[in-house]
Amino acid sequence: MNILQIVSSLEEISGPANSLYLVATGLAQLGHKVICVHYVGRQGPLVQRLEQQGIKVINLNPQLQGSSKINHLKMLFKLIEIVWKHKIEVIHAHNWDADCYAFLTAFFKKLRVVVTLHSRSYFQWVNSHKLKYERLFFGKATYFVCVSEVMANEFKQITKVPKTKVKVVYNSPLSIFFNSSDPESIKKIRREFNVDDSEFLLGSVGNFTEFKGIIYLLEALAELKNNRCKLLLVGADVANLKPEFDKFLKEKTISDQVIFAGFRQDIPDILDAIDLFVFPSTEEADPIALSEAMARAKPVIATKIGGIPEKVIDGKIGILIDPANSAQIKTAIEYCLNNKDKAIAMGQAAKQVMVDKFSFNAMIKNYEEVYKR
Image 1: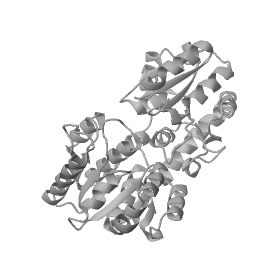
Image 2: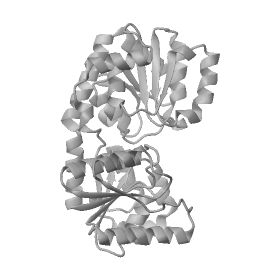
Image 3: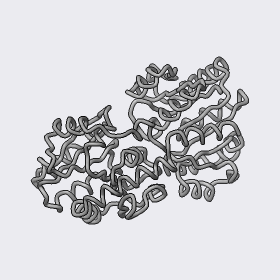
Image 4: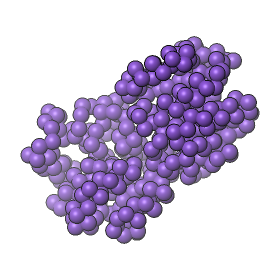
């Protein structure tokens, strides 16, 4: 099949951008012709990764001309031209407002339109453009894909989309995350960050915007009062909140226990080096970073929001906590510190769940089925 993947921005490794990268990569490996399109911001690391795999990436707005109506029309006509030139059969949009370009393109050429919803913000977007969606766009949609059952159920309730057009496809990390760990890489990472074997290393990965809840994790670490416990934070956006974090760490005198690693390419090795993955977000659907940690056999502490409880079985493969609750994070960390064998067993169980139910190959095959119907 000839498939076009579209997302607003590939400048940062956000949920929708990362999902596009994963799906495009998997489809290309199966022999499909895949073209990726974006139109906001500059090119980020995902563009380079896609192009290294021979996947064509097109920026509809290379001059960064803003959001005038004329520019929107120019981008739309450029997208239509791409669809015709490359004989696109399926256009797959990731979140809003990429879906609008996909739906409008379908008025000019008959093709299947698939939209993946990556967060509850999509519901707000649809509600604020209710007339346009109900009168024009819903009829052009082949499928709306939700990344969790809870999101799919809510979407069915708040829209007039036929239930048969709503599918669930869970996010999954690349196959490399399911590989066995390398002891030498573990030693290398821990040496790099000056963490010795006797120290318990917590970790969290993601773009650390405010809703990621990192402040609650820092509060938990401060209350833990265990100087043999360190925290490694890996994420491209941490600089935006770092002054606030630094002030807090200085006040609590735990600056030497927290490591800000910034953006990293070696996430599988990073995950191997940590003892416990903590994901304190206050708003999520099906976070890829959490699935990556589970696939890497890490015990996880995560908030019981969105689709997270659909993957994390409390007490068996991880510990679920309420959002914005540093006391519960502290208690969960203490449990893993005091029951390291059980924590390791939870990590192994987490990997098995990912292998059995949420593998990368399963995700790509599910999307293939959605495209063909």
